[in-house]
Structure formats: structure tokens, C-alpha cells
Length: 256
Ligand code: SAH
Image (cartoon, rainbow, N blue to C red):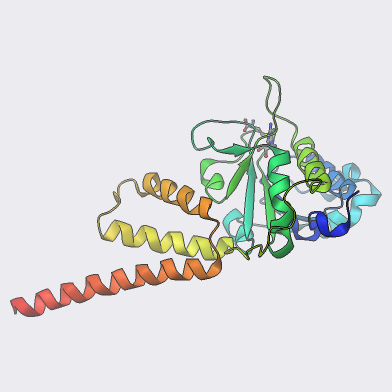
């Protein structure tokens, strides 16, 4: 194993299960996490959280991970404190066109994990993450498979946790000044404000704002915005808003 400074900061990693259907999968995922030294788990709107069934698959060793599971009611709210959100998907194409391999993403997270908290999100067993869920993710990761692409949920958690645990061997570890990224909460506030102002100035069509917002999200996601940069964009939105209202008021006064 590499020295501790080169490895990913496992304490900054949280596994998030969105609407899992089977308690056994939650338990097996907790066990996989424990194998790989990851302890934080959030379970959002589980269909059935029968503790005895969760614990059976977790085994007594991972019972501590299970005990500390946070149950949440809403994915967006659950993800809002994180600086980096990675979604996992078995399906490709459409809004899932830009995907990374597990080892690549794990390599990139090594330096980011020093200063930033990271959530890795897994979808429900039957349908996977919805397009709406995917919009909350900065990056998407796909585990390459043969033609049958859908892994069991807990096995998918295992593959990703393994990659995270073993990451850091040889990548560019010591990127200077690893940034503290904007949190999901800060970004969501910025996107809401941007959508609002861009609809009002007729830059995007109010009938289908998501179409353009998705492009704008992808563009900003590539930039990995810091908190201060989010403030700049929000300040610009505020100023456009102020300017528009002022001109409107000036125009009305001139007519009177
Ligand atoms: N039938 C669903 C798959 C659900 S499997 C679909 O086609 O999307 C449950 C979850 O396990 C997925 O939402 C994803 O989080 C993870 N998963 C399963 N297979 C995966 C793969 N090949 N790559 C990445 N994640 C995968």
C-alpha cells in the first residue's frame, strides 16, 4: 500500500442509496463498504428498511456501518452539503453520455478528497437513477461489463468502493492547491437563480427550461466551480435582475 498521504480520504466518502427496494442489498452494501474502509452511508426513501434483514447481510462486523446509516427523505436535500456528487449508471446514452470508468474517477478523487466531501449515488434495483437524479451529479461512472450491464446494487457498490480503496497508485497525487469546490447546495441555489433570470430575459424557453439548463449545468460542471465563483455568477444574476427592473421603472416614469 502507498503511504497515507497518497491515498484517498475515505472519511470524506459517503455512499448514497437512492430508494433501494430490498433491505438485503442495503446490508450487503454496508458490508462491502466496511471491507473497503468506507463507513458513511445515506439511504434515501428506502422501500423497506427492515433492520433484521439489513443486519443479516451486513454481518456483525459491518453492524456499526448500519447503525450509523442516515435515512433521508429527499435526494436533493441529502446531497446538498457535498462538494462532489458522482452518480453510477448501468445504462448509457441520452443524458448519460459522459461517463467515466471507476478507476479513472477514483484516481481523480484522490486529490479532491483531501479538501472536499464526496457522495457516490446508486439507484434503485429496478430502474436505476432517474434523469432528475442524474442532474444532481457532477460526474457519472459506469462499470464496464459484457452485454448484460446491470449489476446487483451491492455488487456495484463493492466495485466502486474497491476502486476508491485502491486508488492513488501512480496518479497525479500532488496537484497543488486542490480547490474547495462549491457544495451541491450552493450550486443548486445558483442554478435555480440562473434558470429564473434566463427565463425572464427570454434567453431560455419557459416551456422547456430543463433542455437549456442541462447544457448550462454540463458546462459549469466541467469547470468545477468554487464557492467564490458561484457567488460571482449569483451576483451577476442579481445585477441583471436589478438592471431590468430599473429600466422598466425608468421607462414607465418617462411615459408618465
Ligand atoms: N435496471 C437498472 C439497473 C439498476 S441496478 C438500469 O438499467 O439502470 C441498481 C444500481 O446499481 C444502479 O442504479 C447503479 O447505481 C448500480 N449499477 C448497476 N450496474 C452498474 C454498472 N454497470 N455501472 C455502474 N453502476 C451500476
